[in-house]
Image (cartoon, rainbow, N blue to C red; front, side, top):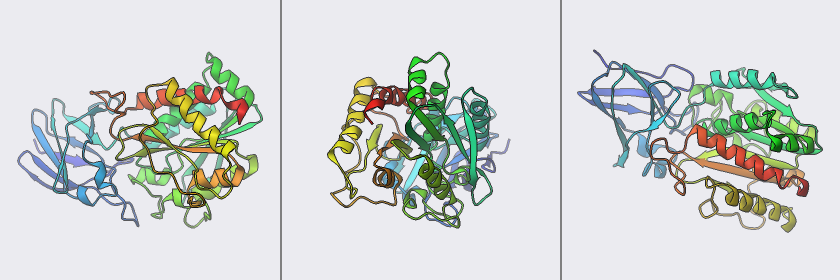
Amino acid sequence: MTIQLNAAFDSGNIRLINIDGDTVDVEIVADHLSDFFQWFHFRVSGAKGRTLTFRILNAGKAAYAFGWPGYRARVSTDRDAWRLTDGAYADGVFSFTHSFDSDVAWFAYFAPYTMERHADLIARMAAQPGVTHRELGQTLDGRAMDLLTLGEGPKQVWLYARQHPGESMAEWWAEGALEKLTDPNDATAHALRAKATFHIVPNMNPDGSFRGHLRTNAAGVNLNREWHAPTMEQSPEVLLVRAAMDETGVDFAMDVHGDEAIPANFLAGFEGIPSWTDAQGENYYEFGRRLAAATPLFQLEKGYDKSAPGQANLSMSTNQLAERFGAVSMTLEMPFKDHDPSPDAEFGWSPERCKALAHACLDTLAGMIDEL
């Protein structure tokens, strides 16, 4: 039987270069109008009973090539459970091997969160008691920018995910947050909804998600460098969401992402904004301390360097919202690899653990909501 590769589907990305025996050479396709690439998602059929080695020949030119060492690809035969493969990086090539015991298997950079699943999420959550849905507008490809709102309290909480579309773990986190907040038997959710109004954008970049991009929208624009001056021509996603934030104000904000290199969950804050106050900053630091104390799925040792005073990049959402609204604003980063302080040898960092971390974040917020 002939081996076939296919990526012509929602969030698919790969280009077949050559098949030589049991070695399959491929390349990742760059984001449209951009040099960014690292996300891959493809299907292989016709290989049952064989062991194939896949080589990503252009891995060394990827956006974050330093993230390949220690990384392991995901594989699934049912598109539900995504397990770790092996993985090796040398001389600019990332390779992994899989022994096929099924007629078809899928491979991805991380467990995909397709736009079809996004549509199911919106339908399911919009039908929950107390949840309202609003289409803020449309993207450059004509896709809806979905906002879900719930809660009756005065504190304004914004949770928004997946500015970078290849960071699919972010929308898994958003799904977990929504499931907790709409659980009628969750006492913490009841308390939060009484004290705060939640505005949740599960997917900030629908076009990039469908196109199989790593980092950009349909115009090749990195949305998390647009928050100072978004436009409908280049970054309607940011313009629409920021306008909605201006309508409500923002007391607490979490921008949910994935990181290619660091094998741990961590937060990045808004150090360096012009209007920084120690009180505002202390609320951010206290959130991190409490989250680390509450769950082994979070840690404080690994993360990004802090900006120097007055040097924050206000084109990034966390900095912009902290400066614009005086919000306790933060970026949550989750790994493409694993959370090394609490590893999972079979699945690595996974959708289930993304959801568990979302639950822990909300539990932590519940303990601080009165202090914001």
